[in-house]
Amino acid sequence: MTGVLLYCFNTESYRYDKIAAKTIPLLRQHLGLEITVVTNNETRVHLPEQEGVNYMVIENQTGNYINQKSWHNLDRHRAYELSPYEKTILLDIDYFCYSDYLLTLANTDQDFMVHDKVHDVTGNDSYKFARNSMIPMVWATVIVFKKTPRAMAIFDMVKYIKERYSYFCDLYRIDFQNFRNDYAFAIALHQLGGFKGYETIPNRLPTLPAAARVTEVSATHVSWNHQGRHGKIANNDLHVIDKGVQNV
Amino acid sequence: MDVNQLKDISDRSYRIAVNKKNALEKARSSMLLAYSGHLFQANAETINLVQVLKNKLKKFVVLDSNQNPMMVEDPDDLLERLITKQQEALNIYHQSYADSTSKG
Image (cartoon, rainbow over the protein chains, first blue to last red):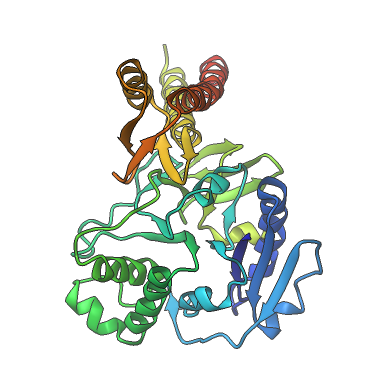
């Protein structure tokens, strides 16, 4: 069985349950798959019962920060053990699904896939991390995996890296000292791939950068303002970084 | 033409360029075909390759998007799916492009 796995932990600064309220119906509509949301007790009370959506309450690890704000991203490596599905589409909660594109990715024999390329929908090509580390970054926003020994090894490796993250940051000269799953998965894939590369999702991850302010989310599109310009993208999956989307 | 008109033209060109880039990226994503457990980009190169090999061979091997080999047992079926996938994606791109250039 194929299903979607999401993580949703509110922080002092952001109500991720409000983002989930926008993204989960889109996932249900376009993928038609069962969804499991990994959450904690504090967030669970804000998440409504919905058909086709299960909740799994855990005690999430805390202590990571981004821009001086709490960032609850330390449990992603547990996706392998937490997922009830044989094949899992693991997504960030701020992934807005407007197509069945993810079903195509799930319909393959590959046991682990991530994006290694991103597409900035504002047209500014703002994601250039080539000089921020000695290793190409991957995007842990979308991970499609099967329950295989190799996939399990990748998640175990991410756990190992997480526990020694500052060492791996030094080893790979990663500029971002706070824990990032993007780099943890990149390192795990690099190491377990025998330092010779790994298979990726062939397309680029459509992303709206943090500097763009979302102005509208509808059943068909997302609109934003960025540097004084208005933008809109319709019927296309989109990873939205701006956490202000919770209030739109 | 005053400077505000020139700015409007510039802004319109910017919108068209960004919309075109996003629509093209969407078309590329839509061209992704899952077939017999492999991923293929249903682009001109793949379609032409399958067509050419089909003319010469009953069965043949092609490389998927991650350079993994796949034996094509039914070339007609693969070609049909590739063409359908590509034309679906390009028809949507064509419509988006027309809308974008007409409205700005």
